[in-house]
Amino acid sequence: MPEFSPGATKAYIAVDLGAESGRVIVGHHDGKRLQLESLHRFEHAPLPLPTGLHWNVTALWSGILEGLQKAARWSHENKVPLISLGVDAWGVDFGLIGSGGELLGLPHCYRDPAHDKAFNRLMQNPGGEAIYEATGIQLLGLNTLFQVAARHAAAPQLIERAETLLFMPDLFHYFFTGQRTVEETIASTSQMTDARTGDWATGLLQQVGLPTHMLPPQIASGSVVGQLLPAVAEFTGLPSSLRVVAPAAHDTASAVAAVPATGDAPWCYLSSGTWSLMGAELDAPIISDAARDAPLTNERGVEGKVRFLKNIIGLWLVQQCRADLARSDREYSYSELTDLAAAAPPLITLLDPDHPPFMLPGDMLGKIAAYAQKTGQPVPAGIGESVRACLETLALTYRRTLDSLENVTKDRYNVLHIVGGGSKNGLLCQMTADALDRTVIAGPDEATAAGNVLTQALGCGDVDNLAQIRQMVAASWEPKEYHSNHTPAWDDAYQKFLALRGETPKAD
Image 1 (tube, rainbow, N blue to C red):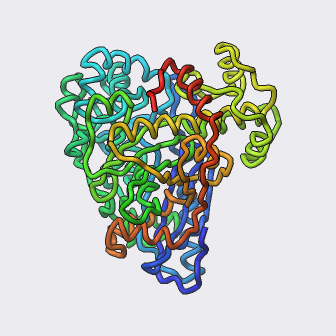
Image 2 (image 1 turned 60 degrees about the vertical axis):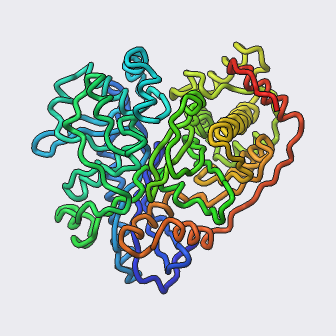
Image 3 (image 1 turned 90 degrees about the vertical axis):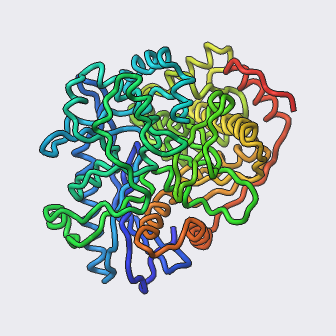
């Protein structure tokens, strides 16, 4: 990433929380170029408790505070004042705040299988069509709507006693300031908002018997939440005057804001990490039978844009393969796994990314072998073949998503921008270009942090608009282009991939 110049005059702190790790980054811009410096990184993971799978909020908070201490020292040593602080994180998960401001229990992880029962119940009544019509959001059991329904069924008094529901970035903004706010891009992931208006879908919530008293008014990206609490300022060494500004608080919203797209030609994006989120940026939502069946979701973006996208399982598959190996004392870096995959024979074993066991942690290599055996495919003979199966499956899933996206929007997208950590995986980027038969532009891998910093700057009046954000990102990183080497083998593999999913491809 671009490094700091000694002439920096002010900086912003981005706290970027992913499902595997958290980071604290400082960013500065001169109106033309953005510069970033990563100060602290920490690992975290959900933990099992008698009530299910929960996030270790104390460990997350500790990691954030340690990073902020480093940011304070950095500011002092470099004589660069810090302007604001903001948090982005994954979507759908939440904490509940009760009377007196206490956190009521540890937030559940979206991978908790306990949510499935509530999902199945609501899919029967009022049904998937009614829920999608009201929210415009892809029907997934991990969505907040079903999590709240599960919590309300298991412990109704907990929901009833809650004064405020805060999504994960909002929860940490509350810890910083004592102010309870919900930023609109993170709220839009919940399946509890109306995609047409952005407001809470109170009619749907009341229809399914869920309370709405704990839902606060939403704020826009770039809104000032408040100033640091004196205790937080003293603990970290940061000035108590430091503003907390909500960025595009959903990590994908920040990443999409930083897609370095210029010009008017249609383009689509892929935010590639633990999850893959692939879609297009629209001026208005599309809520239709075709969008629901695709399925495509309508989430909020910066400046009122709509992120029309599909949630895809992503590099979770490879991450879990690596975790399996680590548990047996075989440590591999991601680059080493990619090299092994590159050496493996192509398009031998494919997976269905929506196969339910793949969503759950643990024994991913065993699950891949079992799926191959069940579907009559060769069982991967080694680590490289298993990882290659994961990567080729993702590339073919992106092709299927592109087909759906173009069918619903009636646009053709000749360029796919890949941002996020997955943009550094050259093998996956080339596979994607080949499978889609389109040009792939990869980078920046730090899109989420860049979008976080620059939407804070937008809120502070230091950046004019979303177009300037993208121009600045394009000037700050040199993306890598991958051109298609498409062969009929990819078409054959796509037919096989669709057949594994029980689908029939449309004629060209």
